[in-house]
Length: 243
Image 1 (cartoon, rainbow, N blue to C red):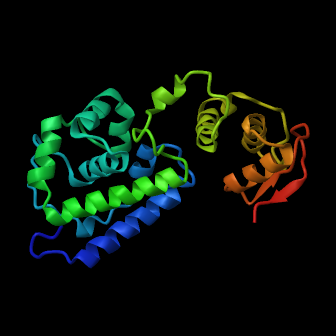
Image 2 (cartoon, rainbow, N blue to C red; image 1 turned 180 degrees about the vertical axis):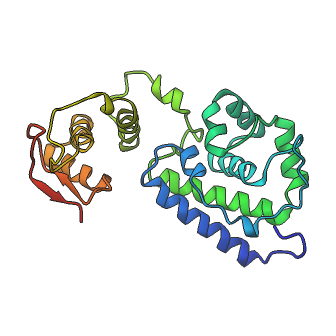
Image 3 (cartoon, rainbow, N blue to C red; image 1 turned 90 degrees about the vertical axis):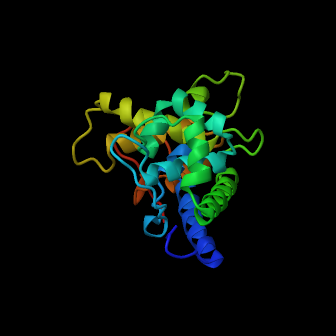
């Protein structure tokens, strides 16, 4: 926070509320807590720590703030957080962190780098993000630990039901790495792109509900103005408005 004056509690609460609202919006599209934290637009103009970082020492403020928001939202200890950052490199990328801080660094940062106002902001915002993530199915309430992407991928096949969050994750991977390999031979001026058709069919195959309900869910999930309706061969389909 601004080192020249103490921030009013109401201002801290307002900043926290603003960031939590962002997180709530991100939870609608993201399926992992770290993606939510990584996508936040933090009010850095109001979050100054007065720490003099040199090129060879310390971490930039914004990445380390994301780390502590992740810690409080996930209810991690310093040891668990440090181990997670070392074990899962994608966390470093999502938080734009230039290295893996040790448990001792995390503890020192919290006690000495951050003042009371900044600690209050981080803990308050982290709790708010946790509540939103639990409510929207991004995070489990019990146990309180978020599973990593890799743990999700290796989960036992005894789980019978795909959650919406896991379906979105599968579709994101398919869209980035699988769909581009397919050439359906459809005309370039077709009503819907190959990606749209393949995405819808993938969603219908995974959604645990009737085709009409699944089609409506896909329409809401998609950011497209129009989506296909129901299953027909991928050459032309009835339009469904998403509004």
